[in-house]
Image 1: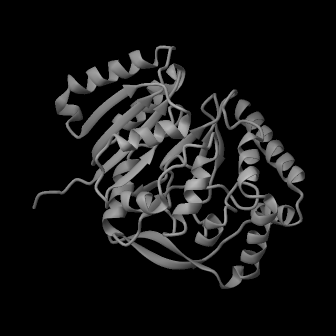
Image 2: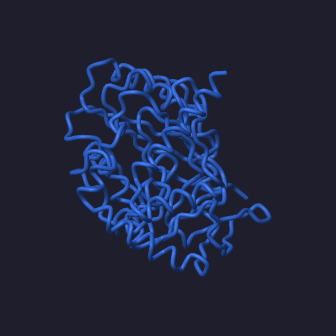
Length: 319
């Protein structure tokens, strides 16, 4: 019996990313076991990014035996920012309602086998529309600065309330997050008016219609480097301008009041296929400390603890 390959649609927004773009592209075109439609939306870069894209397009076209499962395209035009570029890229593709889609920024990477794994899960869990992996953050020297927990849960009500913001609950990492086109349409797509927090806004609107499933593996990595747009408090400041922290803190407190009774669906591989099982929400001591500080509004102390933890990890990796 012939094996039916799953289709997935990925886009990358790009602007003057020549220093990191090649690494991102390599991680995507190395994916196997799927049929990939991949489009890069360049915002009229002037640093050689377009030359890199043209080179990859030629490489894929010249080796159909190796890249027969990939349809690659790119375009370049000025846009109004990151999320406008993402919106333009997805609008340029014809995506079936039940197909998976996602974006990867031009300085991040997919893990080996990530797309085949998430497509296999989606093929078995046809009732589910939204998937992701265990978060990972990598530093400029290639060191792992942060690695999420396999058993950590992102309850639907907290995502919908905007509380998965990195202050009140761990933020939902955009890299390695995929969803079906029908969920994208129900949520209304990305809001291009955002400068930094468009992913957070999309997640909370998606959570009005679907639960998020974290697969027990890492699918992609966020690469942290100096000079990123999300550096500092700019990301949180944009969140605060849309939804005050007091509202998100109240949502956290409401959730904590029912924590013991809360159950979430957890995806598991059973006999070579993916299935779901109900599980309680498991929290470690760091999570309890973070939520204790957030619940009383001690955000500065919480952010200081996070900064010190990152510095300690960098020092350990440098030894």
